[in-house]
Length: 89
Image (cartoon, rainbow, N blue to C red; front, side, top):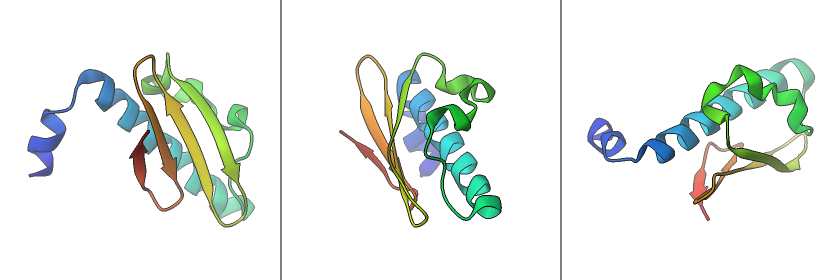
């Protein structure tokens, strides 16, 4: 079922969701060693995530307990948070 859903996504949707998954992984790995989440987008090292190329990334909130990151393309805007929730705006 998930495979069918993913197959129905546009290329742009797949890139955005792959980018968000990479950001989520980086945030969780950082938290394991620093006890908080990344607050500066430069510390995400987005050059290591080619799927994030051509996307605008902003960290809207970051604390010890949670984070919210906005990922924006020319046509879409998504949020991902520390609960792994992806929300299309």
